[in-house]
Length: 464
Image (cartoon, rainbow, N blue to C red):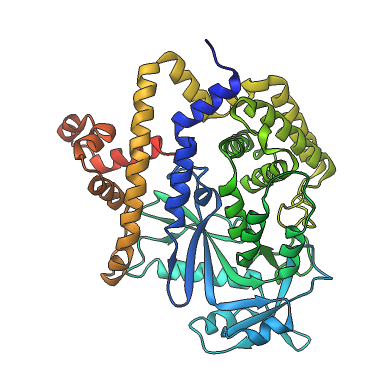
């Protein structure tokens, strides 16, 4: 008996490494990778932290939080804080919703005083922190540090900055990072508005709303596009709250995000760069809030995908997609040209006419279905290998995290080869690991091939 398309696609995602169990395992793994010292905390965020991408698929988004800096929207908060460097959030009336200026109120002794001081701009007797200058200072500092011993193999890349991020690569290019500087931000206005928003159904629950409301907000260095003071503006974000919300979604909702991201990457983003993973995530969060949880079931997956694309088209036509956490902030404001809007709507209409076949536009789905139909035995073997490697690589990541401090002390660095070796150490049966990645080991040795590079290529093929 054949299964309906929704079930076929859902189960194919399982075999490709996107089962609910895999997703939860990745969420727990990347949650545990946060590192901290006296002045800085690094937290994995984005699709890696949410578990919606494989370990070697796409970039790793990291939020670099400076602990000695704090921002406030009230005088009372400023008075009660003992943080060395303090800023007041100002300019709400003259900036777009969700953006603010940071006016310096305190600059006491701290490891990063010089770093902050270089980025201050004097305006009418007050000092404001430039988001552009700070991001550039951070990038230059990363570039300088990449030539020093003990940098764990991190180098700054030449990619253009995407929003507030500063791109880097590590382990000989095996992993790409997008690092975002962030400061703690105490702004109760936006989270109170989100918390008390009227909701028609049962998600998020009151308990979840309270949990999200208790989490720290941050500001990141990016201004509103087109603003005359864009170089000074900072975006207010609730990254930790969004992670909490994503972790509360059910299997169908998470897979809906994954499918939308695949379609956006292959079909929509080539037309308009604003069709990002973040947009697709916000789309699903709004759907989760707007409809009963009961409709988000495996058998409904394709219908939900169609409805999501229809909603996206509606938002594109109206040039308005509210941010889920800050409803006043429009993610599409001044972001989509008339030509892009026409092309996006035409592409969405084409996908909707194709129905489930639209997913054949996504190479991962298309290749998976073709292999399953033509070579089912090999497909099942590859799926089993992928599941084993997913577990091994996550364990290797944990070992790598534990050993990073030791390597820093030794002024050493991580390489891609270290990941493979740690993967072998984390697996009880080395023969299984070798059978998956290098079954032709003897032949390759005979040819004098670079075994490690071949293993790395195969590893990235299976886990990306």
